[in-house]
Image (cartoon, rainbow, N blue to C red):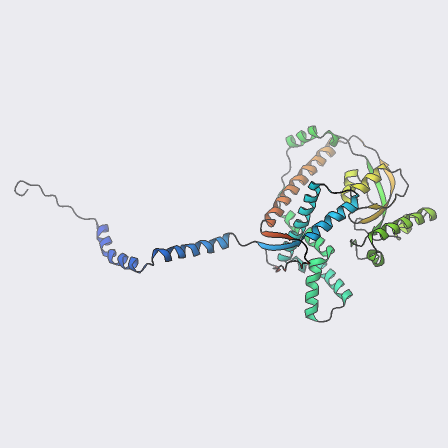
Length: 363
């Protein structure tokens, strides 16, 4: 107490003393810090840098619209009917997807795979380019335009993506529910065993042993050749090996295992399968068009539908469900890849497909 007043003396915490000691440094730092404009610029640059890492720029692909229209025209020529608006959109989407998959396969270094290199060497020897610079340009041209290489690249990439997917086995309840909604699974579908003679058209490379003169012919001439071969087979009653010798090699073989109509459609196309299941046995068909070329087919045997054992039904449903799940996941994986590409479609120009830098170590 002092003169009637109460004075309370408190001790300042040590932290306040530390802050007082640091205040000069803080003030000096703030004095040196750039102004608001420069601060915003630095923050903006940091944001752009982070976005470039997290969201890299998409790879550009340019597609000539003539390629899409050509694919639509080929489809209409094969199936002898005009494509609907929906079918045209599906064909367009398929062409775009094929370009994306080829570009991605090249980016991942799939061009170094032995079958691709073998094909490049084969075509290079045919052209006979001399200098290394000419060979390099020719190799790029082959990678961009050879349908066999592009087909292999897309198949190899899809296989690689498929191996990374995880498909769970359906439960018993799921299998039973599927069987109730798909009673056709309980009865085996009728099957037919078919032989064929194949004729490659000018736009198809069915194998290395294909008749090169026939490949150079027009589509109409190939059909005429197939008709002439059919007349020879019937008139001379040729055996299957002799009949096959009149045509070209086919990746699926000339004597197919028994297949349902759906299974045969997957190999030879819907029109060919439909004729095979409408034709009487032991008769050669007229020339039939498929996405691969022209076919003469003969039904050798007919297997009627039968009631399937329960275990077989369960196995078939399991395969169906797992295949559907695998296909759905694969399509999603392809969509993820496509999201990394920017596709432009232009008309009326002759284009060279984009140069995609290959990287064997790419993921």
